[in-house]
Image (tube, rainbow, N blue to C red):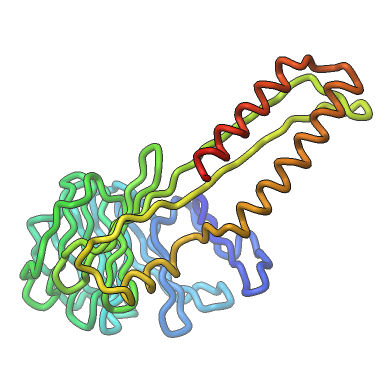
Length: 289
């Protein structure tokens, strides 16, 4: 999703750009029973219903405060969307009929994310209040509330047992909570380190640059967790293996050889820059090993 466009990516990685085109930002998309439900930001917001070929089936307005940060959850064939203006959860039928309004005073006017938890509950994250909580959509009762995450940007309910809560500043962190109690299981942090060396090098008359990208996930587990729980969560994290680092090191050596040939043989770049380039790589390798 980017802007008002929705792209489709098949299993083989093929991409259909502009599969569905809307007039404003799409903040949420859900697939349910061969139907696509999208939420478009606006005042009011609009829910669009498409079939899997991208043909429009129906649409309806959803009253809200006009801020774009809202999501759709689907619980027991009902669409659940926050109305931040009235501090309620609105439950719709698949055809747009309002089934029920649930008062939830904990909802703020800001970025709110939501995911389904079983047949009668949803998990809500609220960026403005730094709260994540579970709500029974029949009674409106708060089952549990957590303030572990400061400024949560989104929630995903996973496997009927875990809630993945994300936060992003200069790095991305995922908190893993128990879906039934809100207890924290573990955290995973995604760090991005860049080493960029660019210069007026010339290989056959073409300017070039060298870019090294290092992406890693770090995990911290709650000691109370059992091994199977941690293993299941680790499977969902981006892989960090010695094989990948071996490939990175090979690429590193190839880059150094090319760089040395350009700098020494062609006498384009001085040995000082070559030393700085080597120092940067050495620093990153020391951090790994």
